[in-house]
Length: 409
Ligand SMILES: [Zn+2]
Image (cartoon, rainbow, N blue to C red; front, side, top):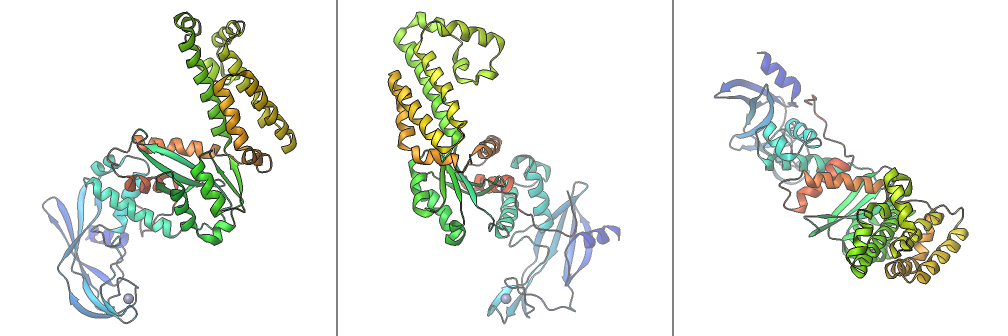
């Protein structure tokens, strides 16, 4: 029968044979029997063992054909294994670990889950959300166990928030490849410590550069666990701090000066926050007229723009000088939010200036974090971080998938 032949060719069945393929109600039921020419193999270590007894029949979901469900039926036996020294359920080469679906179905579902939401995939295969979760978890576990992390030398650390800031995750990326290395709940020193524990002392010692934001918990963990690596505080976070300070100045000035002032600066928010070369002609004209009014927000804006020179410094010495100069300008401006930024920069000066020895940034990470947010947005059903983290690894970890005899997608 042709269907039987197709199933045999697409399924790993060495040591087994297809007894029959029947159409039962709306599904195809494939009954599998052991091939008695072979010894059953131990499900733990794979060694050929001695038959002990047979367990009741189990069903395994396989990839549907033309929308028709396909199920495998097999009664596994137990073997006594001389290597593991116990009695174990035999190895079934088609099964995805202990799951009641085939490896081929797990890989097919997991492949779609990289593109679609889990509920879309569940609908597509008329299975439950939980089955999709198990299939992805299976693929991720396989990939994580086979990662080669020996070449990782530069890492970026960043946090993302979920559920409107109620839950934080700490993510660690390989800055060279842009792949996700580690993700865990929380953003404490302990959260990052758990990465270093996983990464191990040998690989940690090989780290040359680490980039993170000015979050004290991360800085503390990095300094304790990887003191040999150059710590570079992320450029993009520093720029963000400046932009936020400018926005605070704008809001404060409106509160202080009242309605008239609010009318004057109405609609100007993005003029102060955007890069000047991104302004529209109308915004440029409006900036031109606002410039003449000697507003605090304008002076804060000029300070923010002056800071651009810092990143252009040719050497660390020049950068050191410019940073000092900028901080005194900020102090003299008497604009509180800008003075606070100066204070922050002074406090972290040492690890900001390392940028000029090792110009790494989390730029690549910002892009990845946006991707993570997209995954979070489309992640209806990720009530716990566990499944969300699995999906992050799945979509951003560049993990290898289990191989199957046939490619179903
Ligand atoms: Zn064994």
